[in-house]
Image (tube, rainbow, N blue to C red; front, side, top):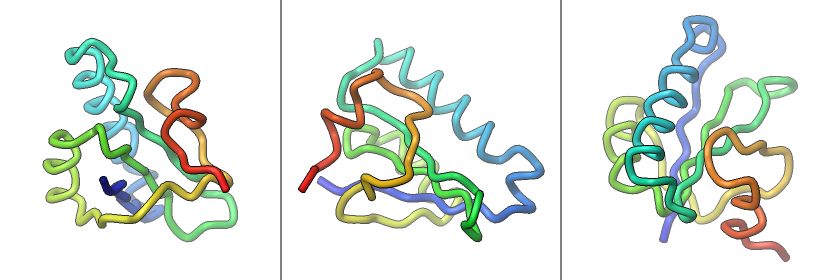
Length: 100
């Protein structure tokens, strides 16, 4: 299964778009009783041109709505370096990310 990535430009970060996405994701996560395969990660804006949000494969179909609204893309896997967990179980990164 694929991961999904939504890149948010700095001016949209200033408008709080990423916070709305995170809040909406959290509502769905909680409504579904916090499934272990559902997680939302982020890079940091420091040193990056965009704030990237990463949705685990288990986040589908929620991601479909976000993906369509914010022009998200499918990616093979989550980049394991420099990402932080925003919504999900504390061990989500270890459980969902392929480590080499």
